[in-house]
Image (cartoon, rainbow, N blue to C red; front, side, top):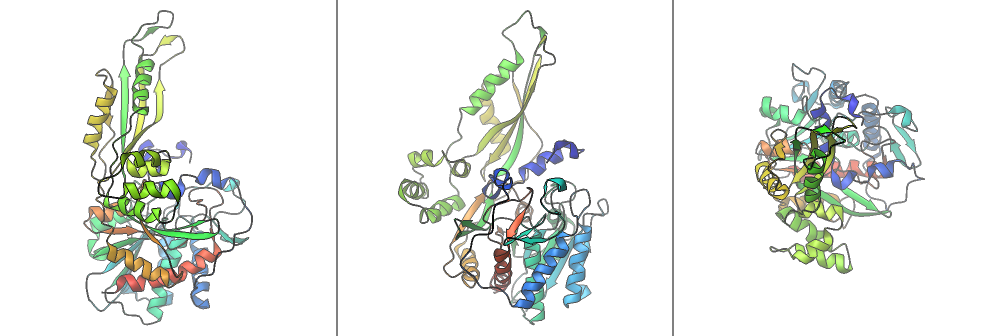
Length: 487
């Protein structure tokens, strides 16, 4: 995404940091290759033909609606409402809402009434998508195209495919006359991608808590089933996420003429500080989620890697094993708080000594760390009183949702009905999602998609999902709603 699009640079920054590491770290390189036909997967259970067709039709309708930040999600929210009304939901059981100051940022909340055995369960999924360079695509990004075993279109993965699965599952339960033990609420929301103007989940909890108040939140954003070499590996369930905090390094002096160099050079001072940061590693720290993650993934790996994962999954992590795992950026991000320089500016002219230098440092904090703690560590690492370090605004804390075995067992129960022998793995995301707002509201939140992904193209050109994975997700979403709403 080009920075010039955003009038507010902070909005661009917030959008950048919302990208999930585990699913998107390789998306740019993957997306430049169109690839051939889809690899064959062992068949899983699919929904009845009528609901399979319904899910595909809903996906086509949603893809055709431009719900980028500039256009807003109101049109998509109204489409969801029309579909649900036609399918049998009463007008009183759904609401389309948008903030008065952001009328295009529409949300729609639908409720399937249960028998009252416990507080409701809330499913959330956003309707907005990131901007798109249509000329770079091989087909119209706002038209669902089926080709070589894939559905192409902006939002197929992130996350209108998930929205279509969730809406179809709600309709199917309604039409089958299913009465869950507790109410099932589905909130299709605004502004997750842009991350600033009118985030729907945040706004609904703040202004319409009565519509979304629940015992548990299940976020179906784009984390979940992973395909490798044509095989389903595991279904990830995110129970926590790292927090992001942006720090600014700045230094200044009186400058001068470049023909008379002096030791107090702002660029050299900044370079020295950044080199110290580059050589620093935050301590190893495991959470309940990451211990459970490494213990589970160790069973899927072999050799030294498997042994190292087992060695870090105990109450006291083996530091030698953690060091070896940290050579992989993905494992490193799970084992440490990380800080990395992402932007730098300095000087004012080629014939002038630089009188200023500035660097932006993006940090991802493990749950439990605070921006103030990290600031103190950065100041100690740099060790230069002439260099100022500041935090760029407050951050939203996101307490860890415990990887409760009972909840993970329900995910497995639903998955096994579609793909027998499924493996469920708790995960911590290095990025951020709307689950942060549920957790801030005091509601435990789990994040896992229904669609298995083989190569993530979220936010990239020629975004796509396997047609087989989408169709099977229709059955999995249906089973998940039934299993999760049981008392």
